[in-house]
Length: 330
Image 1 (tube, rainbow, N blue to C red):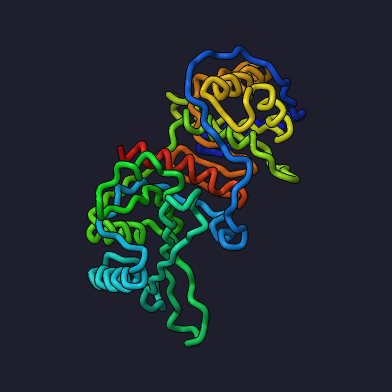
Image 2: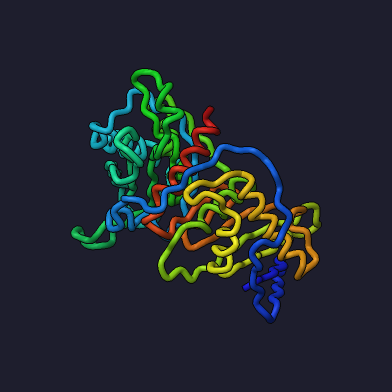
């Protein structure tokens, strides 16, 4: 299926009546040299233990190494962070919703989210509260989640000074006000720095290629690419959707070595897609900006927003995001 969405402020949409199918091998290849990237076919994250991370929008941050952080002290950290949030709430800096009591903080390890024993265990931070108008034994309401991880962060781990812990990728789901408070406490306590992690159009093309090449049983989700057209008085977005089997067939004709991906292959893959689109709509997508990639594996937006859809490839996606976070820190 191929969609062309024209989305100015009024929300107008145009959809062709006939679906289009890709023809493998269409497009002129480009030639560039790059070291191949390896992408594992299967991952070992326990589906039940990481299910709560799926199908949610996570905002990405990079985090510099934490000074004198210890995973053995997570309960103490949770108590200290809870006190800090309460103090900020008294100052009027924290979100104070009517009829709700104080925020409870929980911190725990996520050892499943690492590629080897060399990676530090991921750390999950959760904020919950209970309504004052509900029974005392009522369940607490989860209002904010964030987690630190480092998956295959060898480049940063090798040169890490003593007393520092490398957890360069931070993912958040919840109100920005709580993100600011949690980030402030971590920065003051562990002398680290948080920065929003954007995803460049080049990295989005890598994600499109890598995720297209992943094998998923009964995958019916189209690969969708969202482009923005620059220099217009009103926003104009173009949505390009390709049947997953067509996208996979095209990628299989481009990829030379299974399990490895090069920049040249990514370029050829995208040029084939652009050529196919131009043949139908006479629009040069190369003149636009790629802002979002959605597949059956995950979706990613250039603003640094990710949604995981498959537990079996969660570690592989986190490997790429960790690499992006480390490159921003360095």
